[in-house]
Amino acid sequence: MKQRLWAEDQKVKYPSGRKGILYRLFKLHVRIAHSVYYRKIYYVDKENILKDVPLMVVSDHQNGLNDALALVLAINTHGRRKLRAIARADAFEFPVFGTIFRGIGIMPAFRLMYQGISSLANNGDTFLKTYHELLNNGVVIIYPEAGHQDKRWLGKFSYGYLRLAFEAAERSNFEKEVFIVPSCNHYSDYANIREDILIKFGKPVSLKPYYEAYKEKRRTVQREVNEIIRSRVAELMLNITDLDNYEAIDFLRNTYGIQYARDNGFDPDKLPEKLLSDKQFFERLDALKTSGEPEIQQVYDDAAFLNSKIKEFKILDKLFERKPSLIHIIFVAFLFVVLFPLYLLSFISTLLVTYPPKLINRRIEDIMLHGTISLVLSVIVTIPLLNIILFFTVCSITDSFLIALAYLVCLPFMFILTVDYEKSWKKFKSMCRFYNLRKAGKLEDLFSIRTRIRETLDKLLKNKK
Image 1: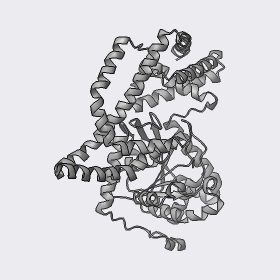
Image 2: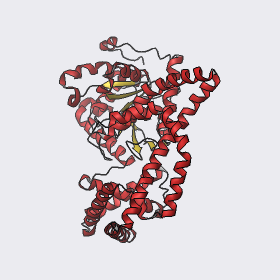
Image 3: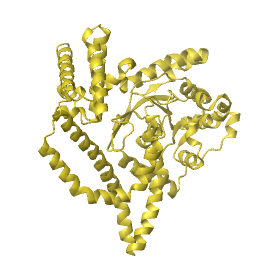
Image 4: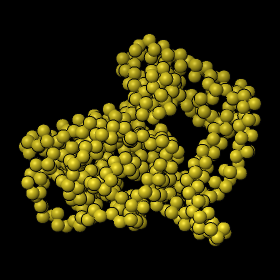
């Protein structure tokens, strides 16, 4: 049946879909930068991205634009179908950024809570393009929480995504079968560079069985389907619902949770397995609290106190297990001295990429935006600018195009070396502080609290499987 043409569709200019060489080079540049920014990228159950059907991917929102960029790169359509993501409109306020975001398939959504009621009229273009892409078997990525969360938990879903999906189906006279794919973005660390990221897709949910009921009771059906989709997303992610004890639970999963993962057959060094272990770990902790287990709250209180003291002393929890010796500290210090010249060269070469985001992030309180600033600013501004400056500088000094080109090829590796060296240096300083504090006898109480936490959890979790 021929697609129904609605009058307001005439207001939107749709791109031809033909991508030029500049777009493809930029997309390649973004993909390379993304793979350098993250240490490991995991894609899980990508087979759930169905082909040749209208597909809406619905995800949790635990970061800024990094979430949208990760999904856009995860769902590689190879140019055979359109791929769009919908992001907050304020990300498009700077004209250059807005042009680039639109160019890679990210569309703006104006929200009442952010841009005010008068801005909602600007959503027409985005909505019409969404209908158009879905009816042409495209993929649309959307975040129903509207804003990103500041913790690993799932907020409320607005019904806007279901309105778009059902109205797209209605525009085909309900001939098209629209599918919704639940998804989650999961990070080993939100803000830091060279961490791991996981993108996981759940089983597609067809809206076709709800079409007839939707014609009669739209809001009721939207509410019913929303509950299903939200529960599917929650099943994929780490959803720590006990917000009163969130900091303690998050601390425990990154400390005791490492050994818990190994004891239960998971590899804590692989993010997909660590996610499964963390989900199981929290579910068991929450079950203990729900059952009224009196000792679990004491564990949370102890963990919160231990976490606060570790932050105050600027040390790492794992040092309680691997107590550093003076010989070990001297050996590590020697390695830093040996590698310093290489670090210095890498640091100077990549300073334009690493330093500007740090300056900006110091002024931004929302830690969930730090990763967006670091990645997006680098991809759009500092990396291209650095490449141009260094290429012509090296070329003029050496009078060799090949040497300048080889230098550019080495820049990603220099960036990785710079970040890893600085991270290791922070750990080394933590090691030195731990050694001095322990020698001064200031960690004895923390050792006792840590032992009490582990003994209590061992008793509660190992005896109540």
